[in-house]
Length: 407
Image (cartoon, rainbow, N blue to C red; front, side, top):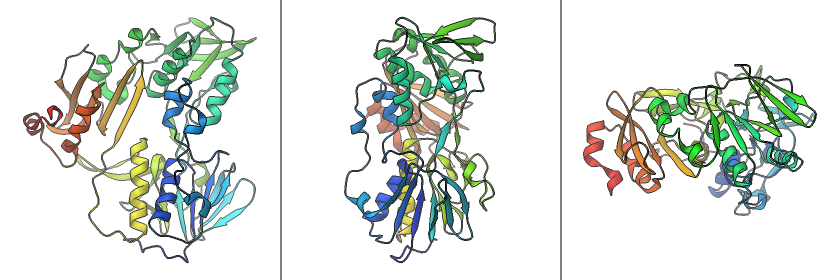
């Protein structure tokens, strides 16, 4: 177990998003009074990202309401915002920043998260991505100059694409969603659940085109033309891409840490002696229904839990660790989709509330007859009640007999 922090230690947290901020905040609240520096590539203070596509883009939440700071802990930290880390010397525990400054610490935390995956298209600089607050500002500014009636094309029908489409439609823009696969979320939620969700866009008045792979996006005056693989084209006032994310680890090239779809860590989040990684960037040992597996999970809840657990470990916590139960949600097309656990798209699925096509339902994922996840449409209470099924391995038959969702 890691030695507890002393006030003579110097902590450097690289990443000012949810994981980095929650860790910094928790260390202060748990009594660490030593020097603590937070480095962030973005100029903004720590803020909550999920509302960007769900509410800020829709115009139902102001930027000022995104702040993650609730107490006065931030005033006890040193902030280096608007400057990215460019390298890490693990042995010397030294972080070099883009402006040439070198920040040293006795403990280093890697919390740089992920970045939006980019499309290699001709009009690359004009294609929007929604990952950070400046992205939303740029998109809205671009749309304010859009030709009336010209559609916004969203490339990618996954969670981000669906949320962006929903928010833009709420603002009154005509939206067309292009999904390369036969239906959205096929590789995430699997064939059964993705089929159950397929009619949500049309019910919300949003056009979804499946099996529509994009070959290129080119500029034509003020408009953009989306060229599809099948030879057809779409003229748009703006194009937004939601085609996945990748861990922000390029600054760690040459560092003495293991990079493999993220920063590989042990069960105490250690990537190297006195160097930890948490949140979206960390690939960590996760105990699932099939045993322990290395996983990198891009969920708000996982980042939050990582930060809380590392703070406990570094401040001398010695009790039993609570199980980490991944959770994420998506507000899309007028519906809330929620998932507990970390199911695979190949897992079996059984409905336990409702039927396909109903306005609300809940289903269990299972692997080898053990519950691997819970998915719900517009059923938040039933999903919350089902959390106990993932606290320890639960046989599918036992889960159906217990039926906690009916409580």
